Length: 265
Length: 78
Image 1 (cartoon, each protein chain N blue to C red):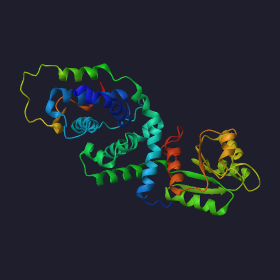
Image 2 (image 1 turned 120 degrees about the vertical axis):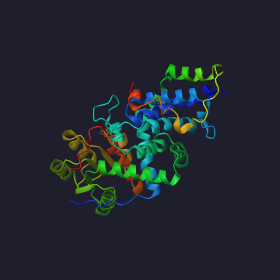
Image 3 (image 1 turned 90 degrees about the horizontal axis):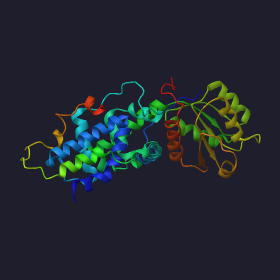
Image 4 (image 1 turned 180 degrees about the vertical axis):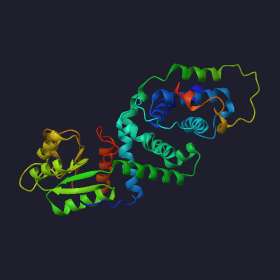
């Protein structure tokens, strides 16, 4: 099988990785091009011991290692969405391990082969990336929940993630008052509240004044699916797994376009 | 105000959180996957296969050295 047949199917994915890693498609393509030139110039450079996709990523990694990852300049990039910028603030090797696994779907073992490190090192790097992300996203979380036990459970897992909980609201009016006071970075809301008021209405009130990501946690998801769903919102059904809520919290904050890196301050 | 008490996530939790962000990242970056590969990339590979290899291999240059001499970060941007 020819080199082009072996390599070409994997190039779109390598370009995706390069763009996410470097924050700019043209810059990423420059590194991909250099990797291909290296392979073309020296047939011995192809890491034949690896499956083709891993071999291609390894060749790219070799160029990165030789040339170094450019430091983020601080200047706006062409791909400068908030999540893309957030990635660039991760330490380089953590960013690579995180993207190889989360974005490219490599196992930890395969990511280790690409980066030429021990698999246990990948686990450490991913944990470090996660810590860096958590620290950057730390914010004030408003909980709208009328059942005290559930509110306490939600509060506990939110605190585990490093966020602060300035208060829990049990009704629509309490929620709006608290949101005005604390300007939360995230809202976790039940739908059916203590005084018969609606968490959906509470969230609409808040979103009318304040751009904030929202996660509904409800035993009545159909009310959200059939009604007018405020955006941007996520939905989790009760009873919930704490890990699911934590994953949704991270996702909602990471991808919210309006979030500022220093909002936690 | 209840203050945070951050703890280390277990492996399963970390995997779920990573998957959640991975899904979102693919939505952002997947347009690249659907674009045609730049023609010059394919030209490089075609050139590598062309029967011009009458020169002997350059010897001991291994993968770790590849691109080190002709590629700087600044070049990559161009």
